[in-house]
Amino acid sequence: MTTTQREPVSRVAVLIPTYNERDNLPGIVTRVRASAPSVDVFVLDDASPDGTGQVADAVAAADPQVHVVHRAGKEGLGKAYLAGFAIVLERGYDAAVEMDADGSHLPEQLPSLLAALGEADVVIGARWVRGGEVHNWPVHRKVLSVGANIYTKVMLGMAVNDATAGYRVYRASALRTMGLQGVESQGYCFQIDLTLRAIRAGLTVVEVPITFVEREVGVSKMGKDIVREALTSVTRWGVEHRVGQLRSAAQKARRREPVGDRS
Image (tube, rainbow, N blue to C red; front, side, top):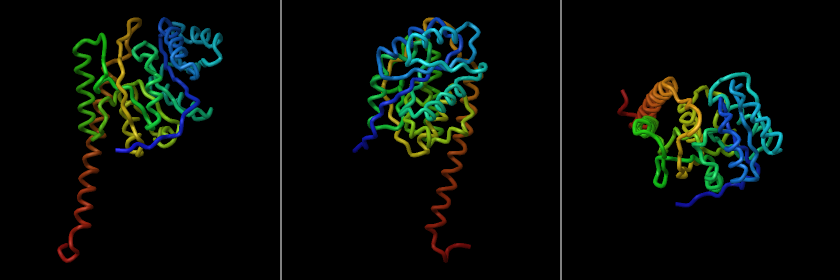
């Protein structure tokens, strides 16, 4: 199997949504800048009541490659990333990186994700592939994540093992072709939605194994509503996918049927 080399990327924006992450943010930004010195960092803060936005401003004041976007209020991960993607496209960046602020996505692994763009439009930092690892998760979280990804893979017919993963890189050219204006999902579902859009747009999606580390400071934003949204949406998309397959098969059968045999 041959792979097509893509245009090299030079300008990369790392998007870090935040909500009450003042204790984690400075260390994460420092590690990003050390691991990939040429990238720009955009902190997308949803008016965190703990002062994360002010902490981000202080970090940005000391580093011209760090920028802060103060958003009006808590609108969720999906809308924060969509705002970040808009900035990436408006300012002429070649690629956008999604990265959590809580330390679960290791900045030290960013260079390997960026390197994979040489043969991909979208790169997913995957936990549930050979070489991927998850540290400090209880068994029920692993079961939930693995089960969600298996269900997604079966229902949507995608050859992606970790569609819920949040550590990923998109080429700007990919973002332009994915129909982002129609995205309304959040959380786990947001990542699945974008993966599905990328595949349906005919883009090349590559999974790179990463080590995922559960946060040590702060509180997870993962809740029952996020899980419920993902389950409902994936089920709906899966039914639509199967119905589409049946219709396509029926159309092909009609085209193959001899004209004289039709009633």
